Amino acid sequence: MNKTAALTGLTGTDLPILLAPMAGASTPELAAAVSNAGGLGALGSAMMSAADLRQETKAVRALTNKSFNLNFFVHHEPDVAGYDAKPMQKALSGYFNEFGLGDVPPPSVPAPAFNEEMLEVLLELRPRVASFHFGLPAPAIVERLKEAEIAVIGSATTAAEARALESGGADAIIAQGHEAGGHRGTFLDHVDLGTVGTMALVPQVVDAVSVPVIAAGGIGDARGIAAAFMLGAAGVQLGTAYLACPEAKVHPVHRKALLEASDHSTVVTKIFSGRPARAIRNRLTEEMRWHEDAAAPFPAQRPMIAPLTSAGAKQERAEFMQLWSGQAARLSKAEPAAEKTVRLMEEAYRLLGR
Image (cartoon, helix red, strand yellow):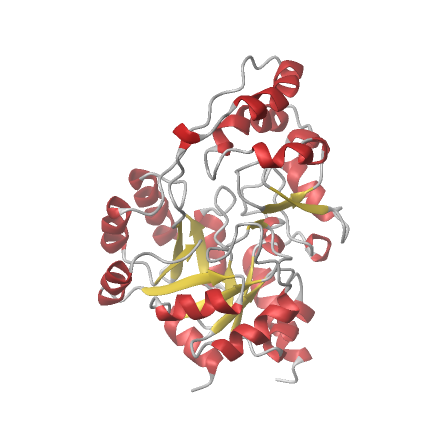
C-alpha cells in the first residue's frame, strides 16, 4: 500500500499533514481548524491535569467531528532531591531582582510523565491518535491503546530511535530533524545528541522502518512539504508554521518575533526546561548559556524560571520570554489555520506534479 494512503488511513484524515502538538500554544480552535481542513489537529497534553484534558478534548469535539491527536511526554521522572539548585538560583537571581520577583523558587516537577491516571483518561476519551515524545510507554500500555483503536505515534531523532519505536509498537514515526522548534525528542542517546538535520534524517528513517514516516523540523512552506515527500516521507508535521495563525495561543510579542526571525535567529537551550529545546535567541538565552550545565533535570527547571518568563510576557519584554521556534519561522504567514492547511498541501501537490 502507498505509505501516504497508509498514514491517512491510520489517522482518519484526508490530507497527510499534522499539526505539531505544541503544549501551551495549541488550542482547541487550532486543532479543530486543522482537522476540519483535512489534516490532523493536535493538543499538547503533557502539562495538563486529567480534568483539563477532559475539558480541552470536549472543546475540540464541540468544534469538529474529525480525527485529532493527544500528545504526552514519557520522560524519566527526575530526582530533584539529588540536584543542587544553588548555582542556578544564583545565576537567575539578578534577573529576579531586576523584576522585583524575590527569591528564585526551588526546582519542582510541574506535571508527571504519562502515567496510569492519564492512560485511563486517554482510554476514556479515545482520540483517533495518541502521540508520545521522549520514547513510548511500556509495550503493555501501547497494546491497551491499540485495543481501544487508538493509533500510536512516536518521535525519533535518529534511525536507531525509529527502529526502537517500531519495535515498541508505534504505528507511525515522526522523524524530527534538528531544525524543529521546541523540545528534542531524543530518548536513546544522551539528551544533547539526536542532532541530525531533517534532510539527512528522513530518508534514513524511511529505510530503517516499515511503518509510515512523518517528516518534521524546518518545514515552513510547500517547498519543504514537497521535499519531504521526495525523501520518502508519508506525511509532514508542522509546528512553527502554525504559530503565526490567529487560532494559536501565542503572545503578540512572540508572534512578532516569529514573523521577523531570520535563519540564524534560534538557539537550542536547556535554560527553560532542563532539556534541549529550540527557541528564538534573546538576552536570557545568550547570557544564561554559560549556566546550562547547572539547569535542573527536565522538567524541574521550568518552575525555577517561570516567574521570570511570565513577568517578561506581562511587560512585553521579549528578552525574557520563552519564544519557541524552529529554524524556518521566517517562512510562516499569518493566516487562518484551515486556509494554511489547504493552501500548503495544494501548493505542495502542484510542485510534485500531482
